[in-house]
Image 1 (tube, rainbow, N blue to C red):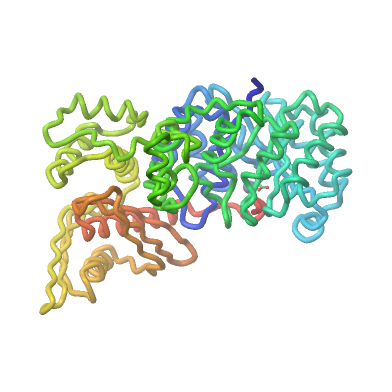
Image 2: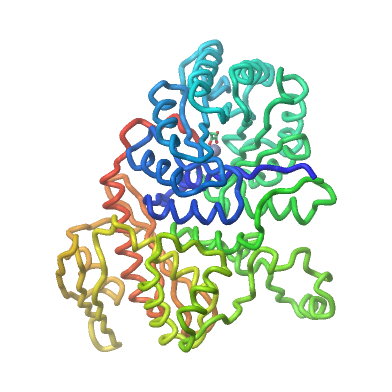
Length: 516
Ligand code: KIV
Ligand code: ZN
């Protein structure tokens, strides 16, 4: 069976989702999980865009061994050289060079002629090729570019040594039939087309990213660029879990395969949601809470009689074990670690003593500890275990009644020093956030606040996500706890830590050309 490569861009295009910025430790946790998942290529960032991105690409390059690790780069000398340096320690390094090819972008963004763009593309690929064998070239806004010009550009960069040719639908404008036909035409007409891997990169503005990617596969594409949970610019990118399961479930039509360990899909999805705070909609295909839930009586009856009546995929095949009860307060460390391994969770950088202690506390607070709880525990450790945490919650006491004004007492460690404060507010969360603001001297705007139960049951952990912004930086904070006020405080502090991190690694060069 022909293999379709899965190119994961969660850490680059995915991170361009509003509020999805991750720090280095968080990116490493995701990258390691992506390796477990079996992706072929990890786009770890855009090294020239900031010190933080450079460092993240470098650390991901060190941390994984099987997938190719790439950095994005414009066709500029500084970008190409920075990208090459960032991946130099990777076992399988690569670079992803892009420049726009549509007349709209040439005229209104790059202010370059077609010849200038062609020359820049060939120059950059040639330069990269001197240092790296794996060079991917993308023609940004390809789906709105003149196909004859695309043929010229792609033929030239293949001649210069590009090994993968990406045809992005940058604005999510294409329709599946059109996008498929474009691949057919390019593969027929581009010189050297049979020497390269053809790649699809779709955005979801019209809800067609997955359909377009699959149409590309039906017309010879052998790489799909996608993100976990479909996160990304605006409406997002092609959702990895959806294309992978479509290819697997409808193998009869596609006749191709991917190297994805599908049982790792659900843990990966949950880990990303936990780390970024971008929660997955209930009805999201494959990984949404309702994706395998049969509600109607007729359906339940049908599934009980025979699963195939209403189920086209088994929940187990994506790593979902219907909230299987795994551990309780009597479980020992051995069983705990073994279950984390069974779930495929990467614990390389996790302090097991801390996580096990948290598990024990959770098992005490909650009757049943589910797989989702364990994923949250590990994610929290990746989120908060990072050296970049300025603010750490050490104590919280919040009181409220129908007769009294809500009151909060909070103790924090700020850069290692303990501080304490107290105050009132319009509700328990407000009281708690006001005290935290006073203690940290931070007063960001709370744009959005949401709470969701991680599993069923009144003793479930609450998962709080809050979107905050300050001086043009927007970040999402996330926290979970059986007590939702504690979860709220953890989420807010997580957001403040992200803000502090973002301020420290403010983007150093103008990244406007990364494009949609
Ligand atoms: O959408 C796009 O065109 C991109 C390129 C940088 C590949 O993300
Ligand atoms: Zn993109």
